[in-house]
Image (cartoon, rainbow, N blue to C red; front, side, top):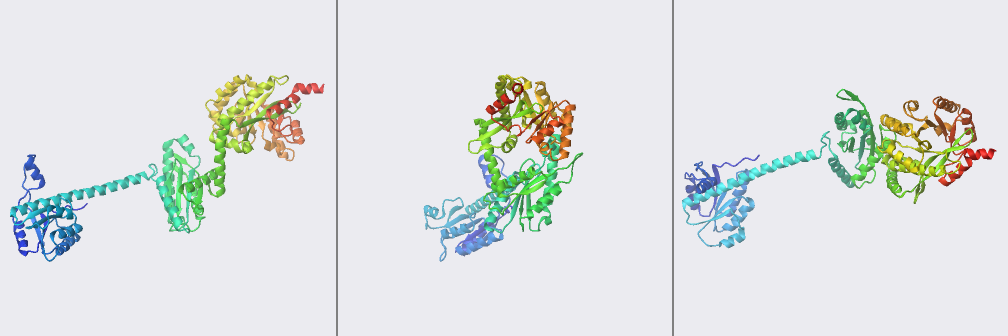
Length: 635
């Protein structure tokens, strides 16, 4: 804080070419004077409080006989930190500056200086003085010859005014310092993550913008952005609670900061900054690299450090992370582009198995654009009903009769043509559109089957429809299935629903409840792709299934690989013992069909019998290969 000037000693400068005047001012202002402050004047006028005698006013008086000498003294006083409060300036001071010129120069040096013009002449009118010096409360006129009391009153009042003004300014300056300090504190809070105290996204964006700008001026400058996401962090929150999850995030942030602060992280000139930008997402900026592959070294170290167990309360928690990396080697213009590409690479790391890092390349961005376009097209396709169903026959191996069909969805894109289910089904699962799509498939298949079953000899056909993991988690699934059956007028035994082992195991408690309600409707449930999951036998034991499909990966190797033949034979025996219906999918050759038939497999489907075909062709196939038609042909 600045020091408040001494109110007892007030500095006065007299500028007059008459030396005798100097002595007069000294005599007048050196007498003991007990003036009153402005506050005391107010009290006298309005009677608000008793007047208290003020301290003795002591004036420190300096003199100059020319304006330029007075200016030099004012400038010196400012440099010494002991400015003058008041200057008495004579109007005429030949051969130098006159009073107006002198005052103008004094105010350029010290704008707060109070001034009294001393004159016995009318060299300037008041309007002329105002025109040259401006309208101001720092200037008064004292006519010669002046009265001693008048001089004392002016000196006391104007130096007092200077002190009050200076005190107010000092308080304002102190207030500004406090405001700036508080503003800086608030700015720091605004740029910090409240949980981990790491920089937040705004802070990180500022740093990254600066790095991009510096790299434009210095193309040799190297930096990298790392996007880090904690793998399966939601499981921690769901199982141990958000309190533990928050404590874990704080521990992760501390490890990131500690690791990135080490001088040997790359080189002593490397600057590394970590920021928390989401629930379990962190961004890191690595600057001052010598080589772009240095970023991979940082990522490797971070993965290693983060993998060490965390002790939170009584819990020992092990986590992994996925990291995406991009560098200034690519011609980035905006920070959003760079963060986007690091994010894309991070998701590639997750898709590749997690607990690893992936370096971004331009093809990833192209893939991301294609994915975004397909995602938008997929939403439009559902609204515009661009999907069609095809049907693959399910045949009884003993008789060769078709007993039913599996309904499969195909996307007829207006410009791309037919899009493979391998391309759009996983995307529909991820973005949630599989729920309305799956409901549409079930409804269309049931309505078509109802039409077929109304024809002669086809009243026992069934249809199989795939059920996705997202549909199992939808609260209206059972009600929707019931409504569709009623709408189509089908008995529950005419529909079989297929679900994969992985979809069941994702949330076992939910699956048990939902599948139990579906079974209560009278609908048969089949395990699809049996043998590829990690809990096949537990699925058969714990869930209300009535059949299963042998995965095509076993079928394609059954002829040439005895081990696969043994596995299939064991599955067939298991199904018979558990009284489960068994379907072999993916049969493409006569040898495969013969071997499965000899093993005792009941039903099969595959290209050997028929590819998936449109509904009209499927109906014709059913008419030719149903039990009664084949019986009549045999007779």
